[in-house]
Amino acid sequence: MISKIKELLRWIIFIPAPFIAGPLLSAILSIPIFIIFANADENLVDVPGKLILTSIMWLSIYWFGALLKPRNLSFKSFRIIWIISITLAVISFLKANPYDLRLQFLEVFIPIYFFLYRGDYENQKSFMYAVNFRITRVLGFVPQAERFPGAVGWSLPTEFFALCLFIESVFFTFNGYPFALLSFLGAVILNSAVSTGLYTNDPNLKLGKKFNKLKRFLIALSVWLIGAFFIRISGIDSLNFLSIPLNLYILPSFLGVIYFPGDNPKDLEEQ
Image (cartoon, rainbow, N blue to C red; front, side, top):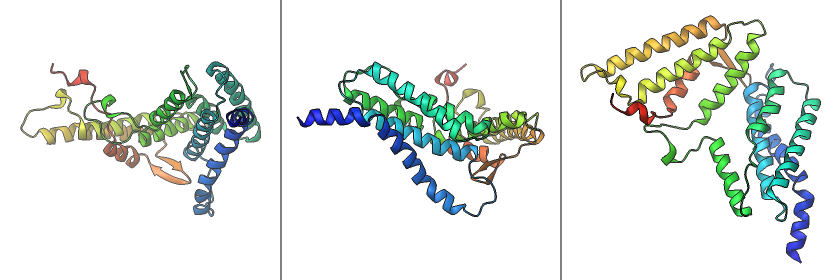
């Protein structure tokens, strides 16, 4: 009897409850941000801020949706219901929030990118395991056995700011900065120069025992200067994060210090 009541309750709330819990959690987490920056002159709804809050909202929605899935509802039907619900929710969000094109893009991109209900499963336990596993992957936590040799740090900050800068550079390309995409290219070069120069074990960068570190430094510095040149001519030298301008010469370099994806095993083979 109790199990039937629980199942009936799941049928009633498995769609509306996640759409309440997700925005609520996102709103709670945004409170400290708006308190701290209450006196800021600029609009706090920038691309990085929107990306963080909307991602938290949708990950929460998907997790609660998976948790509350009715046990006698097939995974295929569950997935179809959620696709329809997500489509309607995104349309309503777009109509209710007349943001600029960058933020409109995030409203559509994020629920598609984070969609967790793929595949069929034997039972609810295996389904929740898969959902939790995908969330950890999305957040940049890759099992040690699957990481490339020499990998250092956490990928999420680098991927987060790379996506934000790419969106901003595309937007500015059509809004008075025709070379804005060079800022993204330059930031990638800066990041790669620092991370590769510090951490790679690629045999092609083993430049002999004598002055090896100095030679690597000079090569990395040369590549870094090329990236800095691209940023300079792009006209975009900062990325706003909650109204705080982050310098595009410093930010990618810092991210290169704290994260390196590792060397592809094929590159480690002696030539």
